[in-house]
Length: 155
Image (cartoon, rainbow, N blue to C red; front, side, top):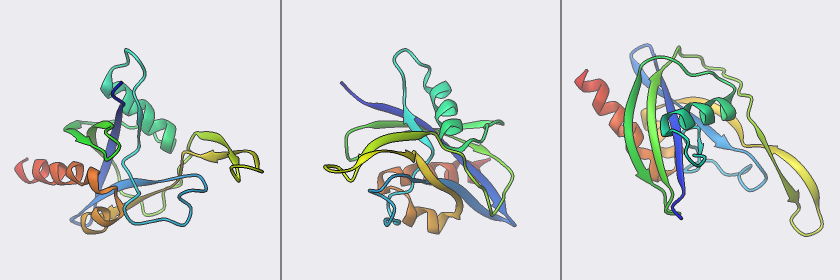
């Protein structure tokens, strides 16, 4: 069975510089990792769920932000795991200090002798300029940023 995710890339401008909003995965496996693991807010599409509606739902669940505006289709990327991710972008107001409110998941930590604990799906959300974002984001998601740049140059 092919895993499919959908998500949104929120973007803005700080002065004239394009900024994209990424989230850092929560949980103990990622707490000390940084470059190459940030992502667009995204998640699994439920059976028979519309891809775009799933992207909006996941963005809200992972950030606590209700997206709105004009959406740009960014097509798909394929992650190393084989998962296909559908993406869209939308413009929002720039803010340097966004605090996200993410859903949580539970897992036993530490794995063998630990107890079940709740962790946020995403523990941070932040705008990055394009150069920084391409370092922070999962490398397989870089095409989303590049497609947004191309779209904005043409329009």
